[in-house]
Length: 247
Length: 368
Image (cartoon, rainbow over all chains, first blue to last red; front, side, top):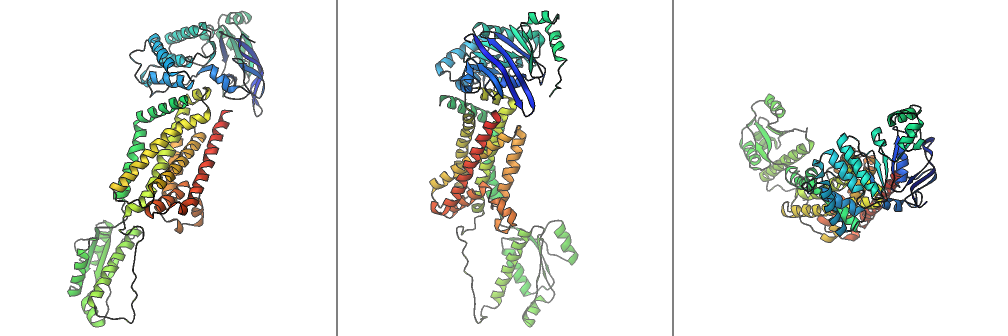
């Protein structure tokens, strides 16, 4: 228990007759980079919403950072960071103001925000842009900044919902370097993606099909099991049997 | 508390960096006041009138002179033949025509009575009524001059007083309505748009994942608009008093308190709208069509509610601005105290509590 950042056991979410998430079970260790894959409509987002404390499961058990998803949503929220595929910063606030706002919402103290935001801006090489509106930044920069903001309050776990959507390959590379950096600092990373090359960067991945976890293992082991050269093939092998159509 | 302050500061950044919001926020009230105060005057002046005098005698001369000297009318070229009248009504150069028949003067003197034809353009019924009233008064006036000594057996003279607005200042009627209208636009529309914008941008998700409580999100959204609406209120009152010569007869603090209550009603309404919509356009449309139009039409400041069919009268009682309008009129124009408006205040407060509860509940439901 003490080394597990996320534990799911028979987690189910039902909307009427439709089981969006159907008895999924998995565990994520602390400091792990966990890839959460699945076609559109496979139930990824629903599962992620439960783990982030945004909705309640219908049945089953789950704990995030040691807190129960039924009773301790508030505590979960304090211990996680979140970044979504939709852009998650405010365009008409400056970089500094964005950092100050999100850190403030997570209760980071003013002096700490001041000191660490200066460091962060130096690390990202954004000294000149710090007082400019975020709206003028290129998308790649925005995404990197959004990630930095999501881990600014040093959460135990960070949830990334397709963080690199629409970003060029070089920036994606840099983005993943930031993810590794965060993992090295002990932050557990829970990431969804549609890019199979990114799946290879993960320590372990799970692939959801029709609300179930169809496979879960390290990328190397999965490729071996399905006798495939790339994760692309593994994913295709599993997902082509899906019955649900895109929604 | 610190978190809330960080949030509110962010909201102010949003407002002050968005030119459109700023324009609606501060340009609109000023424009409305000026428009309603000056342009949309219900008084009628300088009406184009044409006269056809077929008699040319001393009586018609004198009456024409009276019409000419009145500031209500602007006398156009005389009418030469009957067909001319219709053409000039059609091209819009006159709103009214007066025709003296032949032998007008001699009829008055010999037969003791004569007729004048008055034709008014009733495509605008209000103006037509006012114009004919003015002409009636002028004619009656002249009659009196002709028979200063005529004694009836009895005489009933109406002594008229226009209470609460002796000078017939048109702004007085509009100001309370305009205040209600502006709060509806600023508080309701801007609040709903500001919440929905976060949904559209996807930042709402980030906020909901944060430890910031959903209710606090709504409060943080509403507070800046509460403050800005109060500033707006002060601006409107200032303009009304110094620009439109409206006198506040009642207690200013009472008016202020009632206004804050109404602003909160509007904010709750805005939050409710933002809960049921997902795009800024829809939110704007609902606020504008659903709130502004009823405010204009059903609060009674443009059209008297008493004359409406019962169904509209019933609907008007569901509209918060209806009560606020009554309150503002009572306090501002009549100088009445709280004991006269406690019923309306209570209804408004009840509506606010209801709207706020529903919007907060709805916001929670959306989460799970």
